Amino acid sequence: CAGLVLQGALQALHRSQSGACARLCDALIGCLTQPDPAHGDRPLLGALQDPERSRLVEAALAVMGPQKLRRLFRDHLKGHLRGVALHRVANHGLQRLLDHAPEDVVGEVLSELGPALGEVLAQGHPAVVTALLGAARRHRDHQGPALRCLLQVGHAPWAETPPPLSETTPLCHRPRPLSQTPRPLWSEATPLNHKP
Image 1 (cartoon, one colour):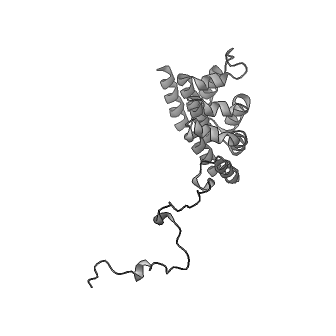
Image 2 (cartoon, rainbow, N blue to C red):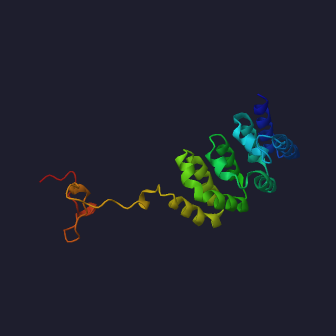
Image 3 (cartoon, helix red, strand yellow):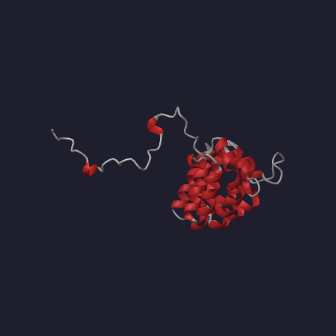
């Protein structure tokens, strides 16, 4: 219940453009990044993996400015993105980060996570890939590299070579030779209401 109140407070303060939003966000992230023996020097990873605390992290990521997002990413997430993207709860926090990340952070996420997109999709987290592509769409310099990473996954239907035609291939699936007379265009076809 307290988590919902904090999430609502962050959203309301952000909408009102109050300076208290930044202070509450800093205090919240400060609490969530307290040293945790289970996660060593990366306590935010533990918060992202916990269903309750991850919602607070997501709410904070949605209202943080570019500088704070950059610092949070470099201090807590960089080098651990594959594990975050593959985790069933933590991947939602990565999506929020990508929704609001500045251009340089998007580039760093793309270079670290791009080669692992196949694993992310195989784990059943296509929303992470969608968020990464959305971030690349906002920052044009990353569009080409993002599409290359996606096409290298091999899940695209055009990435596979079609099977060769055989004698058992139905006629409707066989390509028509170019020497045959083409079908008439729609305008040249017999009208539907035509009576012979």
